[in-house]
Image (cartoon, rainbow, N blue to C red):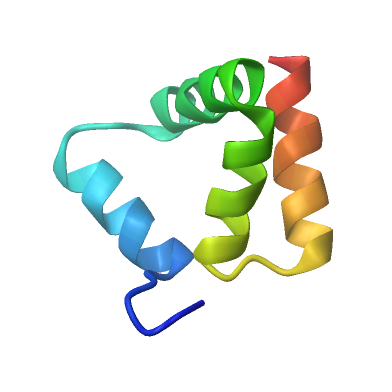
Length: 64
C-alpha cells in the first residue's frame, strides 16, 4: 500500500457506511472481477491484501 493507499478495513467501513451488506460487497467484487480482472487484482494489492487473501477473493469473485 502506497502513501495514498487505503486498507481493506477502511474500504469495508466506507462500503458499510453506504449501506452495502456482505452480499452486496460480494456482488461488487464479482462485477469488478468479471469486467476488469487486472484492475480488480491491482485494487486488491493496493488495499494491502496478502497474496493468499488476494487469490481467495478473486476465486470467490469468479464463482459469483
